[in-house]
Length: 129
Image 1 (tube, rainbow, N blue to C red):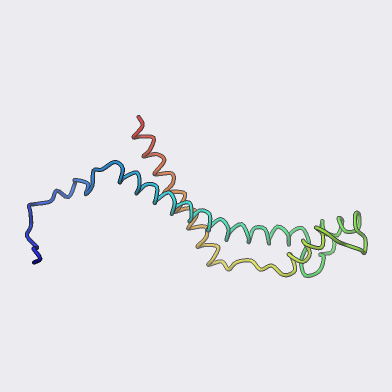
Image 2 (tube, rainbow, N blue to C red):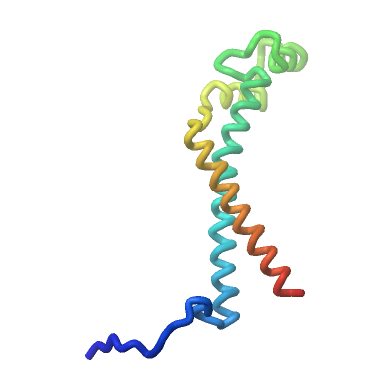
């Protein structure tokens, strides 16, 4: 029924499949996965950078005294704020930055994904020449 007969020695240096269509498919899957790593890693890092930037401008749980947010409020809005100013204030007061571990994972995912994309691009250019 089942035969485990060895047909001969297998050369370890020979690729398992020489079909160019299969290699292109494999490269596409690699590029898709690498793009996902870059995108998801970028989202985790970008969110924390956005929170830090909004807080640095002065939009925290209270408007920070002497900050750019204070200047914007006194120049344009006064006591009655609305629109984007209120949205930034709400975001700055409630948004939380990712943990250092999550930021590290996001940065690592971006580096690994970018490296895979770069290596595949170099291989693609070498095949064209």
